[in-house]
Length: 333
Image 1: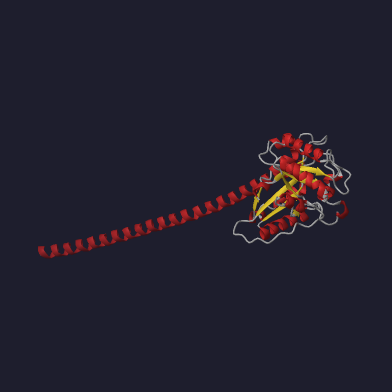
Image 2 (image 1 turned 30 degrees about the horizontal axis):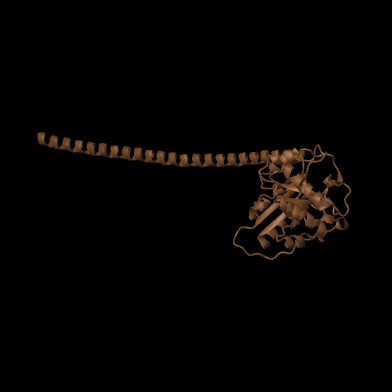
C-alpha cells in the first residue's frame, strides 16, 4: 500500500513540474515578444521622429535661404536706388544714346567684323561701365560683386572727385570725352578734331597724372573725333607715349580707329554690344544674353553699359546666365 502511494505522489509531482516549466516557458515567450515588440516599436518610432526632425530642419534651412536671399536682394536694391539720387537729371543720364553718332541715333553702330573662334577655353566677357562719376555709383556697382570694369569720367564741376574715387580701385579705365557729331552737353576739356598734337598730348599727360594707374581709355561720345583719321593719329600717338591702350566704344560706324591702330602696329579692340541703348530692363537683359552669345562665338566679347538702376538691376538678375562665360576685367581679354 505504501509503494502505491509513493508512485502516485511522484506522478503528481512530475506533472506539476511539467506544468510549471511550460508556464515559465510561456511567460518567457510572452516577455520576449513584448520586449521585441517594444524595441521594434521604439526603433520605428525613433526613425519616424528622426525623419520628421530632418523634414523640419530642411524646411527651416529653405526658409533661412529665402530670408537671406530676400535680405541680400533688398540690400542690393537699396544701393541701386541710390544711383543718380543726388545727381542733376540731364538728358545725358536718360540712356546710352548720347554716346552714339548724332546722325544715326536710331541705329546702334554694328560691332567690328570678327572671325569665329573655336576654342576649348571658357569664353571671356568684359563689361565696361561708362560714365562713373560719383561715390553712389561706385557703391552700387561694387554691391553686385561682379568683376565690372569701371570707366571714370575726368573730373569736372559736376563730378570733381573722380580721381579720388578711382584711386581706391585696383583696376579702372578713364572714359575720355571726345568730340561728337551732335551733342550739346559736352564735357569740359573734350578733345576736338582740330586740336594740335601738343594739345592732345598735354591732355593725355594730364589724364595720366590725375589717374596714375590708368592703362586703358575708351571714348565718351567721340563719333566725330574717332571718324577723323588725323585726330585719331594724334590721340594714339599720345596714348602710346603714356603706355595707355585705346578701346573703341564704337559710337560710329565711320570710326577710323581700326585703320590707325593697324598703322601703328597695334591690335584693334572695340565694343561689341551696348547694353543700355534703351533703358528698359527687359531690353538690357536681352543685350546681356547677346553679349554672352558673342563671347561664345568669338571666344571673347566686350559690352558697355552705364550706371543706371535698370542696367545694374539687369546685371544682378543675370548672375546665373553670366556663369556661361568667364566675366573678366578688360585687361584679361
